[in-house]
Length: 378
Image 1 (cartoon, one colour):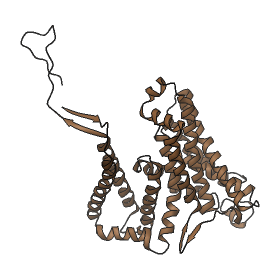
Image 2 (cartoon, helix red, strand yellow; image 1 turned 180 degrees about the horizontal axis):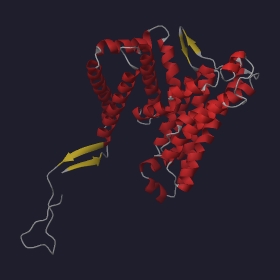
Image 3 (cartoon, helix red, strand yellow; image 1 turned 90 degrees about the horizontal axis):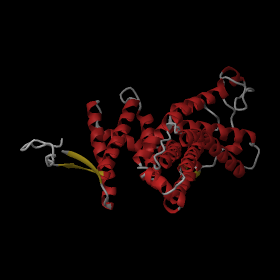
Image 4 (cartoon, one colour; image 1 turned 120 degrees about the horizontal axis):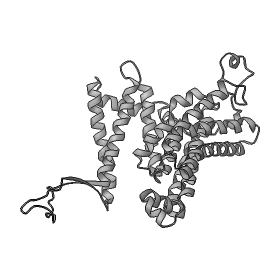
């Protein structure tokens, strides 16, 4: 008989060793895939490292990719910890980009510090409001938030396209000759550009710094506040939370709004830090919201670990674009990401559960069993 049991106590060393061992196993499996596809694993890993960190401009590009993943990873982590399955980070990021760019265009002449704060607030509000729709449906109508939040991604994407390509909206450029032929969004004024932190030739995005600060605050919220305690209880045992009289509906709505706010802030960062214009095609092709699910899962829903994993995934994505060519297809990078994900999740499963293999148990014969007969539990 094979039984899977939950481990009641996981040693501290095991929490550190299992992720490290999982990454080593992932590197070995990915190396086998590289050999099978005709690539030298050692040379490929060296190229990935150089393209991600040491080449000219590589480190800056890595953090450019990591910044939106940090926000969408935090958005997923806060929701999944309470077993609220918000798959709508992609759409909430779109709405955050719409809200932040709208504020940046409307208040472009304001002083730069105040304008940046207002753009961040616009992204937070837009993302939170969009996430409230599946949150309210889950809390009061018991609708599956996986389906509703996922479907709302497409609605947000189509709405973003409508603003730029199919309407004369406030976001669309209607004045320049180029925009009259090829529809595009309005470029923000220089005041709306978020300042980076220059360290030699490396430029650290302002949004990434803000994301790290928010990750620390989120961890403090989870560990040291009443709301965080209730969230942990609801995530571990919803029945125990209901028995204790915790307001589950309010918690679900609050967590969904907070999750959407993080994703919306990621959209605001895309506008303020990098794009400076609402670009529907660029945002949809990047798929930061869906990749954020991978980031959160690899980080085991720990906010500080999300920071580290976002950098690693950003580095892998950056290296994928740098290495992409006829001999190194883009799908190979996605395969490597998937190998890392399943390896880490497999290690997490072995850390949380244990597998017991024993002999088949026998039970005493029932009253109405025939004498001498033996019933075997299967």
